[in-house]
Image 1 (spheres, rainbow, N blue to C red):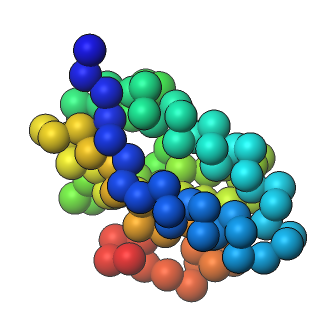
Image 2: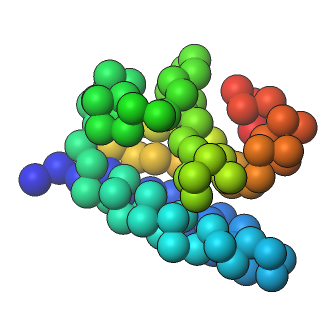
Length: 103
């Protein structure tokens, strides 16, 4: 069984623990992490099929909404190697201040 590897859980934990008001992200961020670990995504279409709310960007970038769209995770996915690199996690306001293609 092929499963995805997620790099780095540390980025997610750091975000959750950085401010008290982010405690509400814990459950959904870890649920997203566990779901990705069990996934077998060979293409962007596989991601969309499993998580229809995901936004597919260019060059393997994907934006996931978590916690009822309160937070966003930007990941770069290396489909052939089944590796998901967490590049950013933050609120929608924080997301609006970054370039999801280059973060």
